[in-house]
Each structure stands twice: as C-alpha cells, then as structure tokens.
Image (cartoon, rainbow, N blue to C red; front, side, top):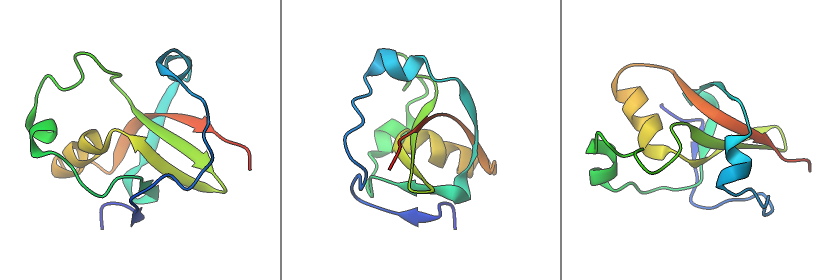
Amino acid sequence: MIFKRVGDSRPYPDHGMNSRAWSQVAPRQVRLDELITTKDTLHLSALLDEDGTFYGDLFAHVVYWRRELYLEDGLHRALRAALQQRNVLHARVHILEG
C-alpha cells in the first residue's frame, strides 16, 4: 500500500492558504504511508511530465487536520516517489486546528 488511504475530497474546512502562504511553510519529509489523498484520479501526463513543477511549487502541499495528514496537492509527485521506491516525500505541511 502506497498511501494510508485514498480519498476523493477534502474533509477539512477551507484553510484559506494561497500560493504565497504555502511558500512560507518550510518543507519537511513526510512518509507516503501516512498520507491520505484528497484526489482519487491522476492525469498520466502530469505523472510523466518532467517539467511539471515549472510553474508550480516544488513541494507537495499537505494539511494536518484531526491527527491525519491529507495530501492536498502533489499526487503526481507522491506517485513518482513511490515508483522510484522512496517512502518519503518532501512537502509543506500546514497545521489546521480542529
């Protein structure tokens, strides 16, 4: 199993984080098997695109809510890491109270 669970929505309340706010969160390593996805589909082109982060953040976005880690953005990065047999992902983790 790559992820703790595969979800298809964001169960946490809106956090109001924009690109600038995310960039202020220092990245850290997160284990793939602790992540719950918020998307259950992936576009293959995003996975195979070597330049996929050219206009986006280099790090995945994870929301910590109710003692769970939700992968909000970066599913293709997480799957790439798994395919390379890595069990951790560098991500920005926003802690949401609740």
